[in-house]
Amino acid sequence: MYWKVKRKLEKHGYIHYEISNFAKQGYESKHNMSCWNQEEYIGFGLAAHSYINNIRFSNTENLYNYIYSSGVLDDTHIRIVHEKQNKEDKMKEYMLLGLRKIEGVKISEFKNKFVDNPIYLYREILNKLVCEELIEIDIDNIKLTNKGIDLANLVWEEFV
Image: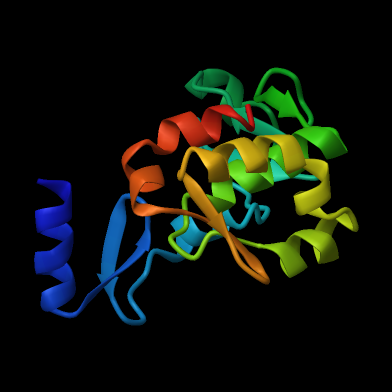
């Protein structure tokens, strides 16, 4: 069913730009793409989520605490830290998120961001996934194959 819908959408001018989304050219979700590119964002308001300086946090769901916090973001009554990432966590997440995009992970962008080469860092995982025909690697891209799209959770598990 997925592949039938994909063909029909593409026939009507939609671009498959990430594993679960299609859009007309220029109408891709900026929010989703910024998440898959691991960009920072800040949420304002009750229960809003943010990702800044390798820390994921949310604002409290408690309206009273939120209103009376005086806008102090590091107030433990309103800010709930969900994750603090180190470099290794961030690199693995970059791979996982990047593999949500149909174009995959650009090796050159990974190197620019982290200095390290993902082909070397994840050589055992990548070799396994290539042998299982779940990903393909070219000069500057690591991306899911059609089989990999169908079994993407198996690929992403390798980077968790």
